[in-house]
Image (cartoon, rainbow, N blue to C red; front, top):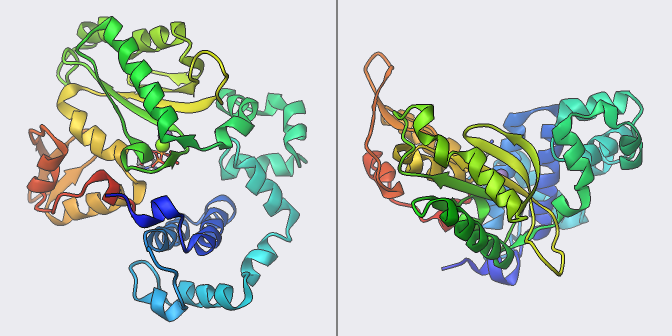
Length: 335
Ligand code: DCP
Ligand code: MG
Ligand code: MN
C-alpha cells in the first residue's frame, strides 16, 4: 500500500523543503555531513507523515527531530520563513555554490574552486569547460534534463526495453531496477539498474564472464539507442545517459548500471534499493549483532572482529532473517 502523502502530496512539503535546503547547505558549503544527514533524517520523518505538523513540540516526539530542529519548525510555522536560510541566501558565493553543485559531477570542493576562479553562472561554466572533467561536462550538457523527475511510467518503459535488449544477448540475465523506483516512489531522480548473469560469480575468473560482461551489454544498449552517452564504464559499473528511443523525444536521463556476481545479487539489491540512510541504519544494526554487511556480502564477525565466510543469501528476506530484523518492504525503507 502506498502512503497517502505519495498520492495526495505531502502535507509537510514546505517544512521538508526548508530542512532539505539546510541539509544541502551543510553538505555543499559547511561540508558537515553529520548535520547534512541529521536534517535529511528529519525531512524524511516529516515526509512520511500523513498529517500536517502543528508545532515544534509535536514534531519533537518523532524520530530524528530534536530541540534545535523543533525550534526551526516553530519559527517557520509562525513566520513562514527561516532567518538562517534568509542569511545564507544573501551570500552570493553560497548562491553560486548551490547552483554549481546541481551539475552532476560537481561536488562542494569543485564548486568552491570554480567560485574562487570567478565562475558565477552556467554560461561562465560553458565558456570554461577546460576546468571540467568528463563527468562534469556531461552534467553541464544535460543540466536541464537531469533536473527533471522521471515518472514510474517512463522507467517501466525503459525497464521493458532494457530487459528485451539484454535477453537478445542471453536469456539468463536478471535485470532489476532498484533505487527510489523500487521503493515505490512516484518519481525518481535517476535510474539504478542492477544486472547479473549465472556465469558471473564472485569466484569466477574474469575470462569466464567475458562473453556476458557489462561492456557487451552497454554496447548493445547503445546500438538500441537506449544508452546515448557514457560518463564512465568499468567491468562492474556503468554511469551514463539513457533515453527512451524514438519519437516523440523524451528527456535524457541519468542511468547507473551495476553488474554484480550472482551469489552477491541480493546484498547488492538491498544496498542499491536504499535509501542511503536506511542502509546506514541496517549496517549499524548488523554490527550490533556481530555481522558486517555491505553491498557484496553479509559476514559474521569473529570475537577478534574479523569477517568470516559470506553467508549464503538467496533473497533479501535472508538478510533480515539472519540479522533477526523484521522484514521491511522496499516502500518502507525511506528513512
Ligand atoms: N546509496 C547509498 N549510499 C550512497 C549513495 C547511494 O547507500 N552514498 C544507495 C542507496 C540509494 C541507491 O544507492 O537508494 C541509489 O542511489 P541514488 O543516488 O540513485 O538514490 P535514490 O535512487 O534512492 O533516489 P533518486 O530518486 O534521487 O535517484
Ligand atoms: Mg536513483
Ligand atoms: Mn543512482
